[in-house]
Image (tube, rainbow, N blue to C red; front, side):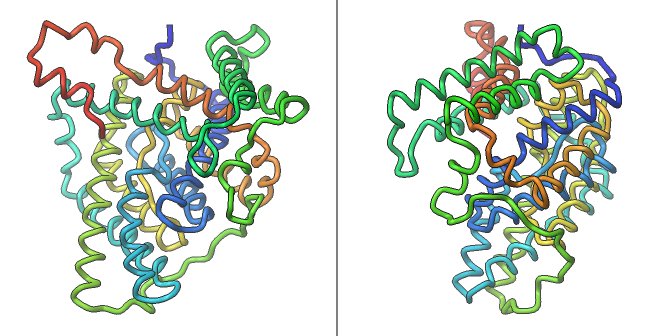
Length: 378
């Protein structure tokens, strides 16, 4: 019923419309991951642009979406904190240096053709990876039902948000005949957005993600390249932080990207190029750091949205990145009005499509140790 598996090669129309859908879904996550890393939202947004465009253009898995991710944000956040402790404004300098070095490491990883070893990962581990991701995505959505201080919203607000979420999911799963020419996910976001704007007054992207920041819109000129090492104190301690964090970022990014690549391979019954993807991920991270982004890797949620919406070729990822850049520079006020309920509904559908429901059929048939690996978090 909620299967994502398909052999369809897609089309230019499908790729373009799917790319627009993905771009809308990238906005709140990129901003949220920026907050997690302790940097300005534009740092995460521009990272998503560079990561998405370069990996879509040159990577080894057409249809896979890359951008700022939670796993990378958590790791680089430590470098930002260390840099800020050394002096005002140094946190970003350390961040960009770490991301550029991580990119070099990933390129080296690809040139040594080590990406092929992802094929040796056993099936239970892959199932555990996708199940864990589904659980993580699901849990992350619950923050939208709470106030900034962590308490639950008022019952009336919860009912409004819940109703819009259900409507979003119904539009995605059972699209009317008139919407077959357009991805149902994009139709759902636009339809629920209009309903929210003219009627319900539901929380928007701006309400949730800019709470307490003093900012209400996304806006920023295209960044210029800058070498980020000028003010760093090059001591043995700082080198340990930079090199150690860069190695962690590189490995986390490669592992998550290659496992996502293999998942998309399985869904589309095609085969991507792991080593090429490693090189593209490295180049994207290097340029992301050079242009003031926080880096990232492949994004399982957005990749599945792309696949479900019909995106199969490189055009979908390129359109998503270019559309996101336009959103940042000129479309911020409009994007800020998207109801958070619509995006939560989209992610709930991703969770349903991601989780391996056949996992429950393994109980009593395989060893307990393998069953536990099917539910481990990434």
